Length: 333
Ligand SMILES: NC(=O)c1ccc[n+]([C@@H]2O[C@H](COP(=O)([O-])OP(=O)(O)OC[C@H]3O[C@@H](n4cnc5c(N)ncnc54)[C@H](O)[C@@H]3O)[C@@H](O)[C@H]2O)c1
Image (cartoon, rainbow, N blue to C red; front, side, top):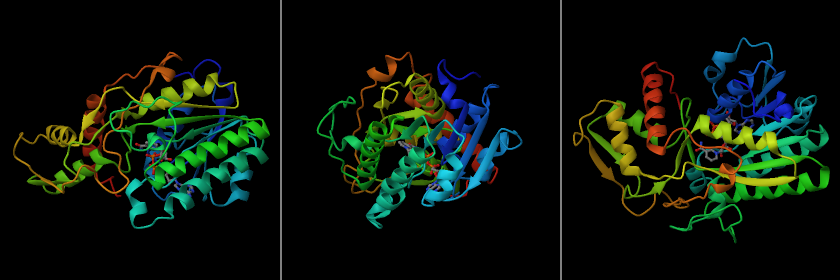
C-alpha cells in the first residue's frame, strides 16, 4: 500500500511506542509501501509486545531499539537520520492515576517533552503526536470541535495530553519543525493492550455467566478502528505544512458500554440474556472518566479522510480478533 501523496517525510520514520497496539499497526502500514526506506521502533516494551511486530520482523528496513523515552540521549541518537517521528508512548491506562497520581506526568508529559527535545536536537522535520479526546474534559452532549475552548481536562491523562500538545506546539514554532496532534476517540483493533472490549472478551472467556460492568453501562463514547486512525494520521501528516495543528479523529457514531457487552457476547457465540451483567453503579467507570464523549470530525474529513468502519463494526471486528488471540494464549496483559 502506498503512503498518501506528499508523504516523503514519512519514508524515514521512528515510531515511539511502536511495539504497542496502535504503534505496531503504523509500523506495518509504513513498511507496506515499497518506497519506505527506514522504520525504527523505539519502545521499552512495558505494554508493547514482540509478537505485535512478528509479521514484519524480517523486513531489513525495520530496526528495533529497546529503550525508555526517559533516556533522552538514546532517544536523540535514535532519531538522527530520520525525517519524522510518530509519538505514541505514554501510560495507556487512564484510571491508573487514581492510585498513582504522578503517572501521567512521568509517563506522559515528561516523555512528550523528551520527544520534542530529541526532535529539535536530531533536526526532525515532522512529529505526529497521539493526543486524545480527554483534552476537552467533561462536556456532556456538547460536540467538541478542535477550536473548542476553554479546554478543561478532568483526568491527569487528559491534562498530560493537553500539556504535550502545548509543548510540541511551542517547539514547532520556536525550532522550525512541523507537528500534528490527533485527538482520537477510543481506538480498537487487533493487538489491543487495554480497553473495555479487551476486558469484556477476556473476562467472558474466563466466566461467561457473569460480567462486571463499571458504572451504569450508559456511558456513551466513540470507537474507531485502528486502520482508520492510521489513515487519518498519515493523510494529515503528509499534507502538514504549518508549524502546528490538531485534528479530532472519530467515526461520528457512539456506542454505550452495555451495547459493547452485548456485542462481546455475540462475538463469543453466547446467547443474549445468558450472562448476568453486574453494574458497579454511578454514571461513570472511575473518577476522571468522561461518560459521554462527542467529537466533531469535519476538519479531518475536509482533507478527504473518511472512516471505513462504523463504531459497532470496529468493535465487533476487534473483539473477534482478540478472542482468537486469547484462545491462542497471546493476550497476556
Ligand atoms: N487506544 C486508544 O483508545 C487511544 C485513544 C486516544 C489516544 N491514545 C494514545 O495513543 C498512544 C498509543 O496507545 P496504545 O493504545 O497503542 O497503547 P499501548 O500501551 O499499546 O502503546 C504504547 C506503547 O508505548 C510504549 N511505552 C510506554 N511508555 C514508554 C516509555 N517510557 N518508553 C518507551 N516506550 C514506552 C509501550 O511499551 C507501548 O508499546 C498512547 O499515547 C495513548 O494515550 C490511545
